[in-house]
Amino acid sequence: MSPSKKPNGKNPGKDVLLIASGDLRLSANQLCWPAQREMERKLTAAVEALGYTVTRAHAYNMDLKHGFIGSQKEGMEVFRGIDSKKPLIVAEAVWQYSHHVLAGLCGHQGPILTCANWSGQWPGLVGMLNLNGSLTKAGVKYSTLWSEDFSDEYFRKQLQKWLENGKCHHNQSHVLPLEKAKVSTGARKTGKALAAELAQQKAIMGVFDEGCMGMFNAIIPDHLLHPTGVFKERLSQAALYYETLQVSDQEALAVRQWMEKKGMKFHTGPNEETDLTDGQILTQGKMYIAAMRIADDFGCATIGIQYQQGLKDLLPASDLVEGTLNNTSRPPVKSRKGDRVLYEGEPLPCFNEVDECAGLDALMTFRVHKAMGQPVETTLHDLRWGDRDQSGTVKDYVWVLLISGSAPPAHFEKEWAGADSMRQPAMYFRLGGGTLRGVSRPGEIVWSRVYVEGGKLCMDLGRGAAVKLPTAETQRRWEATTVQWPIMHAVTYGVSRDQMMGRHKANHIQVAYAKDAKAADEAMLAKAAMAQALGLKVSLCGSKKDGKGWG
Image (cartoon, rainbow, N blue to C red):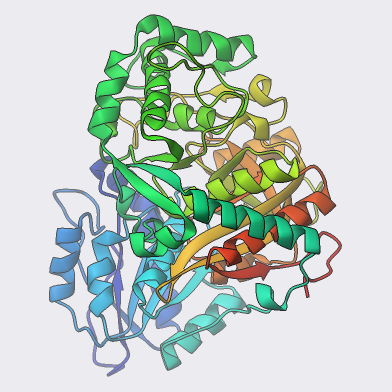
């Protein structure tokens, strides 16, 4: 059973409600429940130590064997039965679908706190950040907290502030509005020119079904997107499925052979339920070709595949496809007539989980980096977790950036030769499919995020580095998260762990490399200038590599 108490009368007016939003997939909710139960036990103890009582607003389901809210319907039912004026904690130790609870939170009148355990085991931090971004877009007031064991001083002090005042805040001294920053003439000129070009010539964002995994924060309203010059082509995953079935085995096999010739390794086995099979890889090759041809048909400059709640019951995972699309060096795909190679010599920017905010960011990044002669490959990652480097190699705090798909081999050490493919976890991907896994190479990066706040498109940007860690430390971090997925060890210049968590409005973070620190600074400022010229509210976060600010 989950930690749950009824008001005992000892602390009148000090009852706090607790809910837990979960996955839509029963297997994930069942497997992740023990971690959620333990997190709630510690969180409840922390709240009670401050003189308050925790009441769980929904019960453990004996038949389903978990205590999560598993659908939007269920979420609405839960909120119909609770006091809308009471303080409410959304406790998250796992990935959650924000729309399960968004309707109820939008109407809740009492203070709201989103809270996650600082653990890489399940994507609880990712789920909380997704909910935070969704609440921000919806205009719902909330506070947010996180902790490794819910006993540290920072957490306890912030929790007490929220319990007493209904809100708590985090240090945002690292944030500078672009208007107050010093932007070089060259960067500003490049950004403005690219913005004018996009606004005048327009571009198409191909969206294979909107709204993946309840990510309300990942949908850009059309009236906000159109002023940037980008317009959606709403595509159907049914069309992608059909087109995938039209690709020949010979064409798909050539995709795998190209990858293996470049040095990529596939970890295969005979069991469809647990292994990556040759048949799964073949179908992924077909999906790659199909996605390219549909993108060409509609003139898409960038595409996003929802996959999770559509294609998952029809096809192997789309992740191998997405990472390959994002790479300049990739298997050539000919047009339907066979008269030309599609998107030859360039990536086709692909945004994982149809995160349209990441799609706009990826398109801008590609154009800025191409114009400035910088590496054009870009990807989103989950802001999954972070920890101190236990090997002592890197003294800075090191983030674990991890994503199921879309990471291009150009980001890996040895590129394709440093990539391998493992079967996706059966908990999430019943039909399997291979990942595009690797360790991101050391180098200077630009990170960014587009989000919606106050009815406007906004963008945060910052600088950092991907760092190299010893093999044993990399493996520790992989095993603490999801070993099948590509990983980046990242440090953020001038942005602490708590500053990042308190500010970031999304589960995803966009990253791209530059040739050196100076080039990365200029690329970041040029993208910031481009975004501002397109009408986005832009903020710079943190500092340069040398610790100097942007003002």
